[in-house]
Length: 85
Image 1 (cartoon, rainbow, N blue to C red):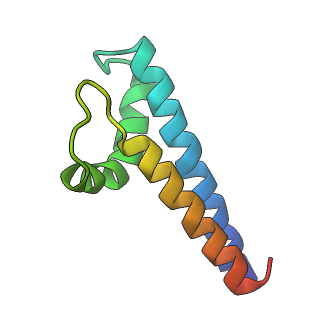
Image 2: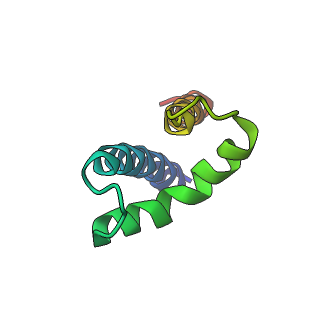
């Protein structure tokens, strides 16, 4: 059980960093042609795409990475509190 919880917490942290990396690389590689940008898009799109269908567009700004980060942090806090860590 401890291994599963530790793995899940690590996965949430990796996803959070992947979202941050995607946002930062979107400023540098706007066309998405760099391989690292493509990998980060593939990893984070399953999280961000459902949120985009719920959250209305904010003009030229995409707020879904911020919402996704908040949701991942809430999920991490819930997991930590449920296992007593």
